[in-house]
Amino acid sequence: MSEEKVTLDFLAHQIRVLRDDMLSLKEDMGVLTAIVLRLERDAARTEARDEDMLMQMRAMVRQDQRF
Image 1 (cartoon, rainbow, N blue to C red):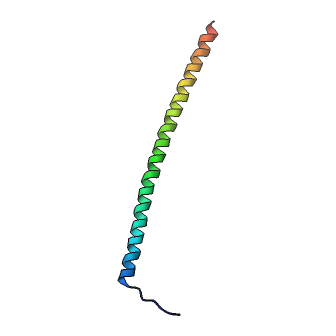
Image 2 (cartoon, rainbow, N blue to C red):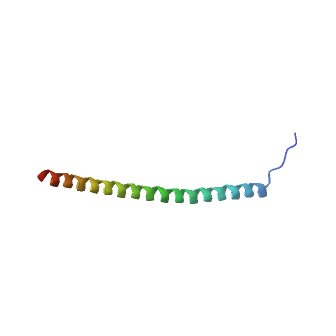
Image 3 (cartoon, rainbow, N blue to C red):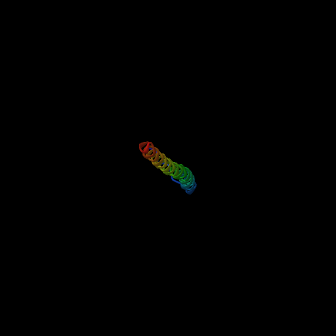
């Protein structure tokens, strides 16, 4: 088996590759976090809208029951 020497240039290159990968992951996390926050806001709005529709329907049923 032949042994290859590990040089500082090789190590520096590997560290740069790891750093670039970490920066990419950090950017991806930022995008995914923004998506999740948007979906949570949309879900909260949908829930509020559904609650409003339910209140309107209940009011309409009460109004109809009076006649």
